[in-house]
Image 1 (cartoon, rainbow, N blue to C red):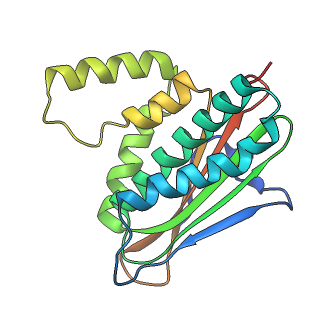
Image 2 (spheres, rainbow, N blue to C red; image 1 turned 180 degrees about the vertical axis):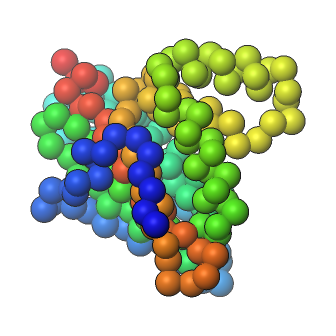
Length: 186
């Protein structure tokens, strides 16, 4: 059964001019270093059109880089063995990214539980509540702070689609994000 969390219209597809990056499992394994490198590359690639304004370039590059890095780190941290696919595009209104990977069934269940908590209500209020909860319990994990920060501070719209994979106890996860570009530059 396919399950959707977040904004449904984000998952309706990307435009034709999509850039794709595929990270494969291999002898070096996919690691945190690959997240930062990939995020920097994507941020540079999409911010270049704003070179005429140093402030716009820096703001777009930072916001795109933060979004991609946060989503890539989650994909690396929680993935089942296999590749991670990143697809990104930008128009005059927004930067859009889709990250696809597989997770095991338990991880999918736990993540869906978290999403059911952080996608209901105002992201700013939820972020404050989660910061307070983390301060009260520093050992807590899987808090969703990065996702809440993206929604609250960056205006990102997010959607997650969980679908059965080919293997038993493996779930295909697609994460969609849209970041408003028109608000970043003036």
